[in-house]
Image (tube, rainbow, N blue to C red; front, side):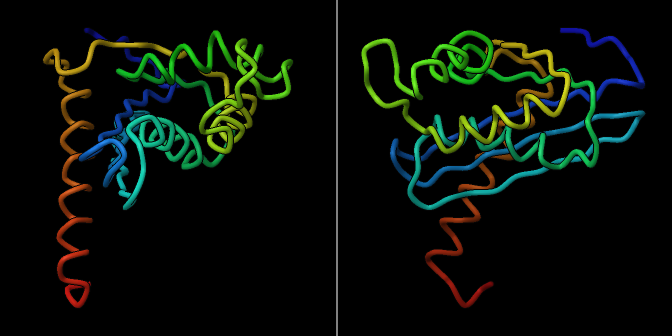
Length: 159
């Protein structure tokens, strides 16, 4: 995938990972703007892959200090379809699915919805683990965050 250079657009790649599902999870994002790259990552002890995918997008968008034009790339259909196809229906149904179930991860979806309203975002899905350099990088960062979290859990005095 070739990205077009546009100084007015922030390009973001996000990924989430989980060791067990649920289990220890990690999230990561890279942000590019005007030739500068910034990497973010973190981990949580007891979570799911979908929560980490959402968290990656949320943390990346939260890091922007002003409303921005964004191209956000995720290998999660859950995130990409959720925000572009399902969200408006969930909201109109009182945060319930078409099968009348509560929307899972509603706390994160509400936050992502708020951030989506603040920025002008084009949401892109890309195939994961397919050799796209930026996607591979955020996958590595998310998995490294999991390893660091597990290591810290085993040796809390190391912090």
